[in-house]
Image (cartoon, rainbow, N blue to C red; front, side, top):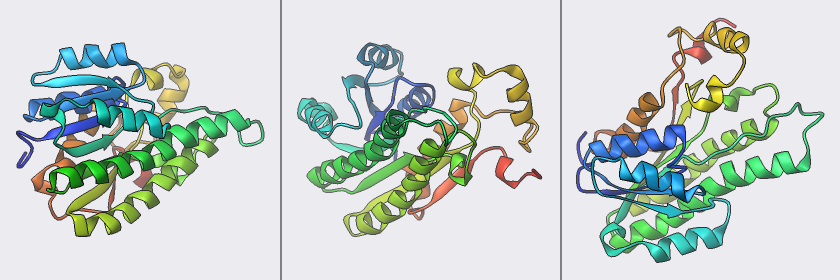
Length: 247
């Protein structure tokens, strides 16, 4: 894709299913990759398997001090970050009536607060090298509402609003901000769901199957590239047609 080779990207949640796929795709496009994750050892393993220069750094996306420590620890050859892929996210599913404060707070803090802190940090990093950049956030088709995910749906819907606002404020700085809203993706967490539930989900997808992390990574890479130079403030749904199906 145009305009990716030679750039530097920060991928949060880079040790996870989608995050590691994004790291692989960007590295294959010639991007230097900073893999940030709470699981530092897992992030190191991902970095070691990439096709180009990569480093792994510890990051708790919900903590401002952790973002500041990451920025301070960036080596000189990875300091010119111009792509941020905000991938880190968690779920704590319960029905609305049974959801506990801790379930709500953890999901909002990691998914929404973490994305907000990432956008703030990227604005500063991009300004440091004076070239603008691209931010790609991860929303979800849960923005339309999902049983047992009041916390997750709220966080992901918040990310769509944050994305639009960050795009408005970033435009004058040469920063594009977009989001990807994946549907059901075949990550280890999803494949651990009972087979009968997975079969029901599959029946609601026009493509007739779950998506793969690599397919979401391809969308992220597109939005980071110059091929998407006229795209900002958008949430791109990648769900195999599930949200257009007959429910």
